Image (tube, rainbow, N blue to C red; front, side):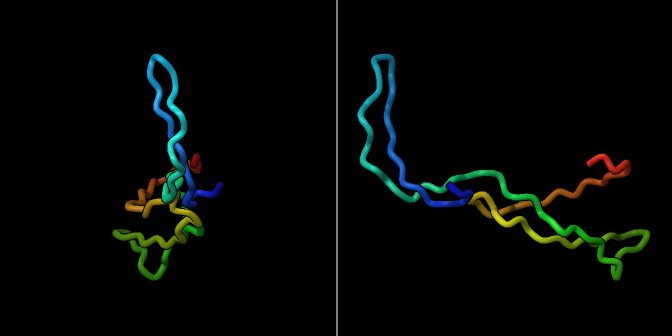
Length: 81
């Protein structure tokens, strides 16, 4: 299976007495996973100054089945990331 892929599924219910039989197969479930990391992070030197930094990057190949809603940029002062 691949991230974001639509899959067919069945479900069972369980309680203290045991498990039900499988439900009828359903479709449309999407594997929801974290998105792939962005890549090709670069500084746009035409904008960067003492007071402003502009970055550009490429989004990851997969969004994990849901649109990416935010990116967070971290300052790495020691090269530890």
